[in-house]
Length: 322
Image (cartoon, rainbow, N blue to C red; front, side):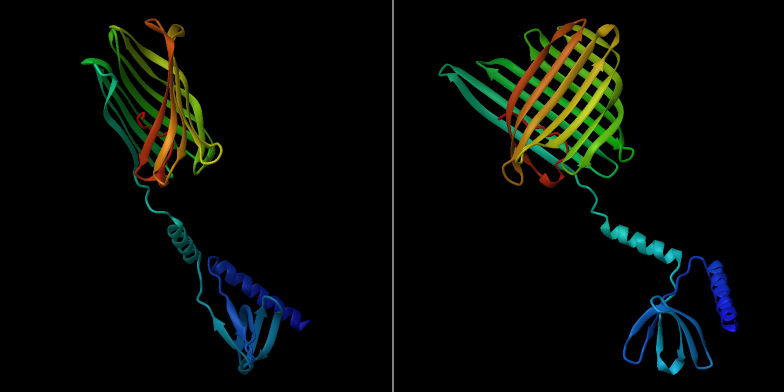
């Protein structure tokens, strides 16, 4: 009975200590004469008698000179939090760097001995991906002159940023502009859009981001213009197919008033040849149905490109035709 009361008093004292110091944890080790080690904690050490609670054997009472106790320092919640923060900092990777791709072709071809043809095709892509989002900027230029007559003087540039709100959602903004030489002058296109949507399969080397979008559409064709607010959809995709081939795509569809609409899709099948050299098949597709124009444009191009940092290749690439 007395023993039960003593144990009760010890238990009450332990409970009071836990309440008084909720963030502290002490771990002791009882070392026996033969080197045995028992983890636990000291209950009492007084008048040559040691009372020890073992995590495995329970309560143990023995002479103090028969064993010794190794005491570990008191750890608080603050200590644990600082240790966890240190581990997280150790696991944190280096700050993301910019990665870029560039491609250029300068040459002179002859369709016949009397028809010289000068060409210049170039492209540049800049991208950066972090835990917060992904930025992609690209610019393409195509020039061609045949027999002193300008045939191509076209450019296309775009900037997009996908902001990661959490593991499932994103907020994106995209600005696109293009100019194409035609027999009637230059056809110009400009779009600006913001999208809110969902993230799927988000892993290194693969993702799908899709959602509704709202923005502004501006077209100039043969001296006529069309512009106005529009709503539509935005999609970005990267997915491995087979072997080392991957699929990259960025699609934007905008619908203006009275059934006027415009869509553009940049799709690429890409395969690396070395760590930095790659070959790809590009498809640029545009479709418009507005008051000043109605039709589609489809252009396929083989591409050979060079990546300055292949380990940080994020999203669709942009390079010039071979």
